[in-house]
Amino acid sequence: MLDGVNTPYETLRTFRFAEVAKHVTTSWQVGNLYTFYVAMNKNSYQKLPPDIKAIFDQLCGEYKERMALMWNSIDFAGKNFAAQKGVEFIDLAPAEAEKWKQATAPLIEDYVKTMVSSGYSEAEVRGWLKFLDERIDYWTQKQVALFIKSPTGPPEIRP
Image (cartoon, rainbow, N blue to C red):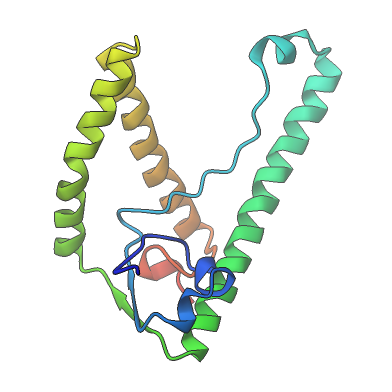
């Protein structure tokens, strides 16, 4: 029995959550980061000839864009499915989102401690977290500026 779950909209359809859920809180401010990337061993990449690196870089960029668009598509399908099942969507108010962020702060601090105990410097780990926050802000603003619609996120990008 689940009292709640923080998950993408697509699971409302694929995991059939919409068949049992009555309410969904849209909590884009505090969860479900969709990271799209292609990873390769750095040393292997450095060994590639420049012309192959250029092709690889171009294809990886296209992949990220296509993957993001595909993810958006299945998220729309999940939200639409849930709406057809009568699920009520509730937007998380900014003040409430701040409370949720504060509630997760101890988990983030535990993560920092775990990574430091694994041999990383605290400054390095906090740098990673700062980078993620900055990238989230950057890409959210980019999405708004480019009018890329999404089923979740700030109101100005929702259809």
